[in-house]
Length: 88
Image (cartoon, rainbow, N blue to C red; front, side):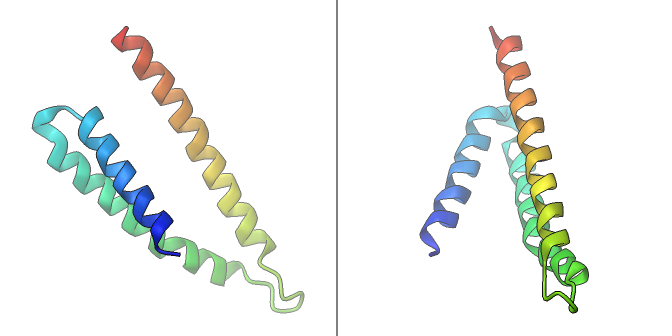
């Protein structure tokens, strides 16, 4: 089960090394690592806070996670497209 998260982390940091300016790779890697750490810390807290004991349901927390993931997808897609246009 740890294989795929490991591949994901490796892919992200390889991508950062290729996309970030050479003089700022360390700083960008630090920010990306910090964001990943927060991503592993806050979602369980949100899921626990949104848990509905009466219905034994995590629906609200899952919806918030989906909305956050879709927002990140849209942001990534628009920023990636914009960056490629500037480089051309």
